[in-house]
Image 1: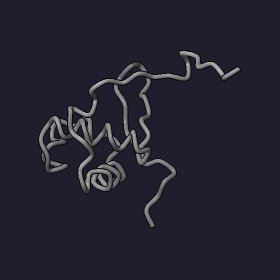
Image 2 (image 1 turned 90 degrees about the horizontal axis):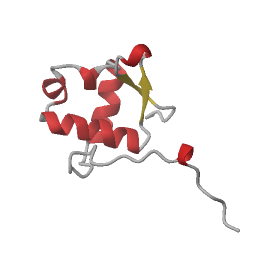
Image 3 (image 1 turned 180 degrees about the horizontal axis):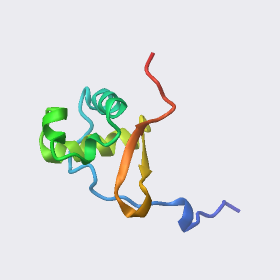
Image 4 (image 1 turned 180 degrees about the vertical axis):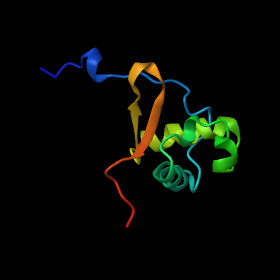
Length: 91
C-alpha cells in the first residue's frame, strides 16, 4: 500500500512567480541582496535595489525560495516575513 499524503505536508502555491520563469542571475541576485538586507523584498524600493520591475521582485523572491537558496521566516504578529539565506552558501 502506498503511503498517503496528508494536508499538513502539502502547501499549494499558485502564480507566485508572476508568470516569469527563473531567469539567469536571479537566484544569485536574490541570495546576495537578502544576505545584505533580509527585508529587501518587502521594501518599497525593492525594484530599484534589485534593478527589476515590481512583478519581477515577487518572482525572484518566489524562485529563490522554491530553489531553497532563501528561507522565508514569518515575523511575529503577522507583520510579514523576511528572507534569509539558507544553509546553502556560495563558496
